[in-house]
Length: 439
Length: 142
Image (cartoon, rainbow over all chains, first blue to last red; front, side):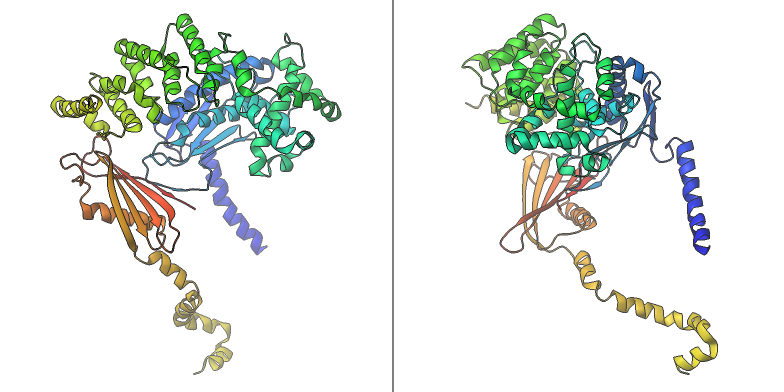
């Protein structure tokens, strides 16, 4: 009885605290509350971090809902908690702990994301992979109403991984790629490593597994996700193309486990093509070209000629060339592409021509995407020119890019490039010109 | 009066009187096995090597060899003292006249034959406030 009284004494403040937090919508704990069409976001992070999440939330929620209009119509808004130490906060980060983590709770309709700053003091939350993980968690929320999906963990994760790959084909819409590059490669890698018999056995275990077997081993989680995505991808392809995604997923969710197990064999055959070869197939397709180009640039020994041809098509068909040139900037810094003789220099000259007349916004984006590699040195003249811009932000971004690609020491303090007197900045620009003309 | 006589005369309530001197003594005795490990954290940093260079004109890097790893607080305190000692808030050792924007400390364990990376501490001058460098992050290796 004493124990009960003690417990009730402890529970009361906890309950009161919980009630206060819920009734205040977590605004007692977090500094910022941002309301959007798709939900609400709480965070201590600055606007530079929260804005990409709000934009991604609205864009991908609209996109995912368009694929599952019936299931998503009654889904309520989501609560997103963007946790973790803000950059520049004097954080203590211990290596070995996950740098970034995402989690969805269906009971509270809540997504929790946490990310620490990296060694440069930049928040890991701003990395593209972190935003994709957010899209994965948001897909969990929006697909939770699909009948028959509940507690079938391979299907829950498979559908979330399917929507995680959603991308913008260039017109601002939300498009699902023909396959998810990361999970496709993981499936192929594990198939090679483990052999077909073990791979199929793992797939069957994943399909039949409960919550514990699916999520218990952290080191196997990416493999389980890849298997879940891969098998769903295989099943979706077996339906007539004209069927909607929602109809297909309803039928898959209604399939009994025995019927699913019979369909595992054909999956291995679907994994026979190399990623690079599969991506090449989609280069001529205007709606998939961007996706195929971004994927191919990261492939080992991909042909720069084929990518450049696709970029030329993109330049012809799109009014805004920024995306195309930002892909070129990444190609220039890449060590894995195969460049035919002369093509690289030809396109470097075209890039210089573009930069001469580019807007400040375009130059800022291109400078910030310069890859930290000595190969990017070939476009250094265009970046040094940006130091003379009237746009203070562009000067600061250009100086940071120069520090990434050159051994020539410079001043990186943005305050200097934004506010120092012209004469002082000119001394630094002259030093760069002397360095580039030293031979 | 002995403790046993007092105990039998007054019962367990005698503890209220005896508690006062006994509890601190018992606490000190019970802490004896833990104290040596506390000393490791409290001991001042023993620097066995220091190297510095300018990564950029306004970015200074220090490689610090330590005899033993420090706690997160220890690294922060050591770098705070080092910044003041070298006057890095106001002076740039490599490029006089150019204020330091960033100071990066990399700590290594130099004990024995095998050195090991312990962690890093980053200080940066905040935008708009040019007086003092500010602690950005401490990253500790496991």
